Length: 116
Image 1 (cartoon, rainbow, N blue to C red):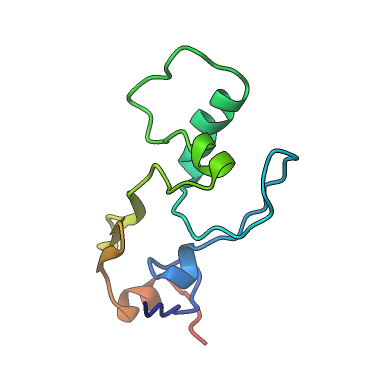
Image 2: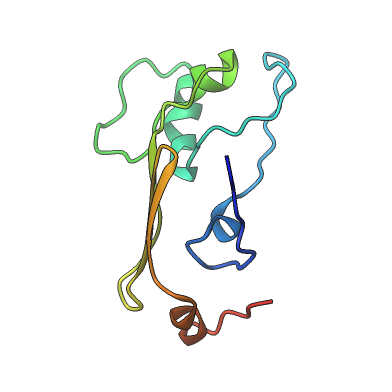
């Protein structure tokens, strides 16, 4: 698998949206995960960990990732909206190992993003 990181923050490219995270629990096996998890997944995941029994609203964007984290299973999430900027017509959507993007480096210059 070829992964290219364009190292520009505030963009729809992987270098701008991938964020490392550290989660610790004595229940976890020490490991590094490459599974897809979105910031919106934390609410339903922590609700599940806290013993929440009633299903949260189906209108949430987040997905309960607790079983994936605890038992080293595949992510419950298969897609994520990474960027949506109506004004500059820039967007990115990831679905499994595929990603569709709209936008150019010229659009970044309009946003005053410094490119190394």
